[in-house]
Amino acid sequence: MHPAPSVIVFSTFSGLGFGLLIFLGLGMPGVTGWSAFAFFAIAYLLAVGGLISSTFHLGHPERALKAFSQWRTSWLSREAWCAVVALTLMALYGAGLVFFGQRWILLGLLGAIASLGTVYTTSMIYGQLKTVPRWKSPLTPANFLSICIAGGALLSGEVNLAVLLLLVAGGVQIAAWIRGDTALAQSGTNMETATGLGNIGSVRAFEPPHTGTNYLLREFVHVIGRKHAQKLRIITIILMVVLPIILMLVPFNHFLALFAVLAHIAGVLTARWLFFAEAEHVVGLYYGKR
Amino acid sequence: MTQLPTHTDKQLGLVIDLDTCVGCHACVISCKGWNTENYGAPLSDQDPYGADPSGTFLNRVHSYEVQPEEGDAQLIHFPKSCLHCEDAPCVTVCPTGASYKRVEDGIVLVNESDCIGCGLCAWACPYGARELDQAEGVMKKCTLCVDRIYNENLPEIDRTPSCVRTCPAGARHFGDLGDPDSDVSILVAERGGMDLMPELGTKPVNKYLPPRPKDQLAQQEEQIDILAPFLEPVATETKGFLSWLDKTLEKL
Image (cartoon, rainbow over all chains, first blue to last red; front, side, top):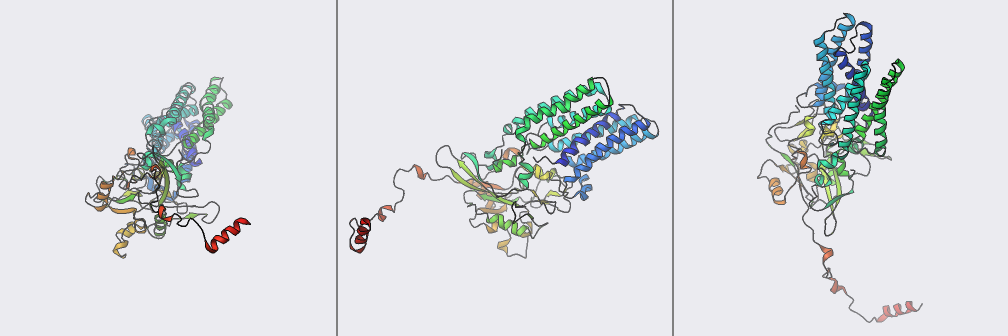
């Protein structure tokens, strides 16, 4: 799949922002007043900034409100609802903390659930697609959710929890890669089933339907950079998991904490780039590109 | 509404004969010609006369080489457009309701004024039947020429999809695949029509007729041209002017 920068940035930063909102909703850290304002400002910048960047890849962003209508069947529509509900609940909850010094526990809890729901619905947009066997697995939501929660723990300064959750996120990420590498072969979809010509013999693409490129090849048959996938995977785990853990285990220092967060973000961005760049859409079979 | 209908009155679709298709791409051109100036936004091209041309098409013809375990390889031309699936995954993923499947005839359409161009329906389609138009920013797909098949301003013979009307080989057939007694359903039953990627559960309406078994010419030992004996030279000795010319030229 084409790794569109807008979608990579969106899922990385909004995932981190909603992760922080989950912890704020649960009262970790139990801040009020100006320090609460600072935490909520960071969370909203990340979550909303990510959501806005996701509209950049739309053909008609001005019609985005229509996307709220089909929540019965569409994960993208459900994501839109979850995001608005989460941001509204958390804004009310945050106002209580910042302006009234009050922690409305139930509101925070509901906001945290809606924030978690937003990331889950995002992950299911990909996890539902039978056309991308690498994504069609419970490991896809597990991957997105574990990274979101670990990032939230990191940003909210819950050091012990963050170390544990980063290890979990790293483990899920590695499991997703291992399963994903054989997913297309295991799916049973190949050039023979795609063309229905398998009972005659083995099928080879002889001539493509067009001499130039097209939307399908640009969007679904991205192959550049796969040769570096193994190196990028190692870089991902080092940046996303190992470096932040080391930086948190040494005596606390604000600069080191900042570096831990920056390393984690760089790691998640790399993971997301790989998530798209490595994903094989079955339409590539028609072009003999798998 | 992106919930799929539980039942459609008809299942209009195409039957494509892989045995007959000659790979001329006439259906591709006639499709683009009709659909760029009728239903919805035009089918744009980018850099059409430049170094890197590309454009939106609703129908494309691939060519495959199939190598049987024994015998000669076969070349098969393979037209591909929207299969108007019964269980269309492109419809249910649409967040705006722009994609829908019609209850009356089962055609899968895009209401372009509701399309936000997110591309998710194209991601969900295993067949590559949907292309996002780069100029309009909306999703384009085969409409089964919905603006021809019911169009009373056209002569009756033209009330069929443009690709079917154009095909010079008669490799494309249009009809109601939900009616077991229709011509297309009988054709599918007789020729063993098949689904593409049946394992994905999309239940395509369009069917493909497999190529018929080929003759095994290379395995025949005898001279295959039965007229060849009649073409053997009858005069073994040359004479006359040509004989003289031949001999003279040999001597030079």
